Amino acid sequence: MRSTSAAVAMAYTGTVIGAGFASGQEIWQFFSRFGYWGGWGIALACLGFMVIGRLALERGRGGTREFGALLASAYPPWAAAVGEGLTAAFLAIGIVVVVAGGGAALSYFGIAPLAGKLLTLVLVVGIATRGGRAVTAANSAVVPYLILVTLSVALFYPARRQVLPHLPLSSPWALSAVLYVSYNLFTAVMVLLALGPRLPSGRATWRAAGLAAGLLGLLAFAEHSVLLRLPQIGDLPMLAAAHSVHAGLGALFAASLWLALMTTGIGGAFALGQRFGKPRLWWLLLTIFLTPLSFKTLVGLLYPVMGSLAVLLWLPLFITPTRRE
Image 1: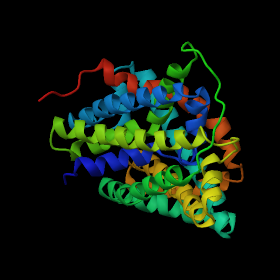
Image 2: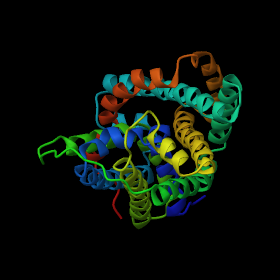
Image 3: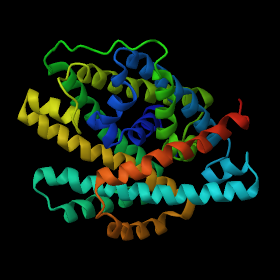
Image 4: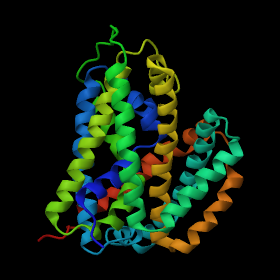
């Protein structure tokens, strides 16, 4: 069944927007800490998301629907096998990160951590097992909410004068933007390969990738504008900003952190389902035993390695020609 470019764009956007993005911590670390140069970094990252996202969708339309096939088209068999095995392992560990974060986010509403983890895990696996249509539907419902809440914080947060560091043009803002795109494409490429066949034409892939890049840019610039006005940057800067505007907005934003985790988890589980089969996704319930590690600890251990491996994911998109109409 075909999907609209907008639905695929929502799935792409939702896969990239995790709790790190929604909380503002990723935007600060990769962009806003460079002051106004961070805005140029966001623009560069959006260009990367559009170009590489379109390439992945086109490869999917051309018949490459699994990450293993993508690796096999560019690397020796042994390297492709190692890369595929490592990727599957890191996707599973990524689910552990999402579940641990889900338990922490739902504890804000008085839900016991273990109950919050189980709820998050069952919903992630349940939606992923229903296939690409369920993934696009879930993101089409969640992403507009994330956009609305983020823009509300950016709009109502009071203007403050902040002294920004006068960084030279030679500061590594561009490199930081490239690393951000690479890190976030770890799961996104696999999701886009699977969703590519749901688009009817090359023009539709451009629309989907362009719309996703635009939405990501809109959210990143909105957070960037708030982060430049914050008197100090804590662990969850956007949540702190939302609370300072109104307690109700803070509660809505806390919910958005859990939903952002959900969209990332659904994308990762969907990619695993494409590789091993949807019925086997229920084995992911066993990952609940790995979640006693804290969300912060898991992110600190896993994400730097994922960012390095991510280059293996999207580099073959440039090596092997995409399908042309």
